[in-house]
Image 1 (cartoon, rainbow, N blue to C red):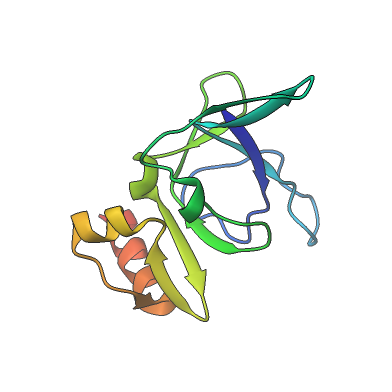
Image 2 (cartoon, rainbow, N blue to C red; image 1 turned 90 degrees about the vertical axis):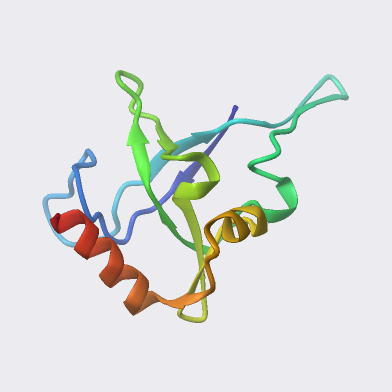
Length: 125
C-alpha cells in the first residue's frame, strides 16, 4: 500500500473530519492505494498494480478530482472504483487518471465546469 496526503479544495458529498472552524487551509486527508515501493537497508521492494501504473500516477502539486471512500475505522480513504474514481485536472480540462480508464469509458477530456455539473446532477438524483 502507498499512502499519500491530499488537501481538499471542495467536498461535494459526505463529511470529512476535522472541519475547520474558520476559513483557511483544509487539513489534509490520507488516501491509500494498492502498490508502491519501499527501500529497507538498501533493498528495494515493490508491488505493482496494473490499474495504477506509476507512469500515470498523480504527481505532487497536481489538481485532481477524486471519488473517495472512508476506511471503516482507520480514517484513511481509498479511491472508489480504483482508477475509475480518479481524474486529473490540467488547464481547466478533466481527464481520466489513466489511458486505460479513458478508453474503457470512451471518455474524452472535458471542461471542469461540464464535468462538475455532471457530478452535481448525479449527486442530486
